[in-house]
Image 1 (cartoon, rainbow, N blue to C red):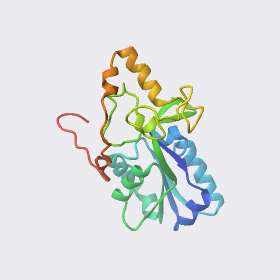
Image 2 (image 1 turned 180 degrees about the vertical axis):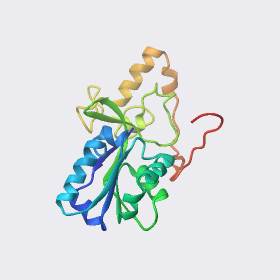
Image 3 (image 1 turned 45 degrees about the vertical axis):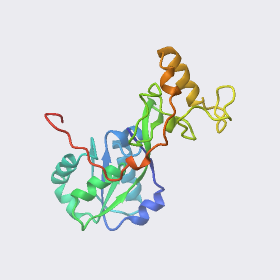
Image 4 (image 1 turned 120 degrees about the horizontal axis):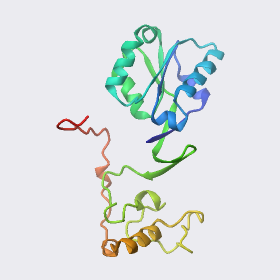
Length: 218
């Protein structure tokens, strides 16, 4: 899931023009506690306390889904048409959905910062385990990503600063390459990590990419 954090309130208010319609996201932002129903309602109360008129609120289960955003706009046509600003409590992808669907006359304001792609450890902990680099090495490293989990992003084993299986940058952090090696022993894949990895081609991490599904996949 995409992890977000709320922007400073003064920054949000400073960008608002006229009355506001608030959008939230019921999946990622809800889990991050930045744009679910509770957060949207809390934002409504805060803005009203600042004498800002709220034209309506709507939480879409996936703000990054263009068709669902279009439906939300149709279902809330009157409130949205009266708003000068659409405040989007969703990741950057969700904000772009709003930009693509709402009229250009409505100012789009992002209420959160997009931080990283995270794995859910529990209800209060999200951990970054993928850097979306576009060129996975997971098949060579036992499913453990050194690009993300090693602070230096090393592709060919641990650095010389590793001590007692811990990272030299953070002594509370297990060395990613120790984990990779231990897993390779168990799975008898040491030969994979003995191969010298070439420099990573970060050009594969292209901006504004589009993936189109074929067949009956939805």
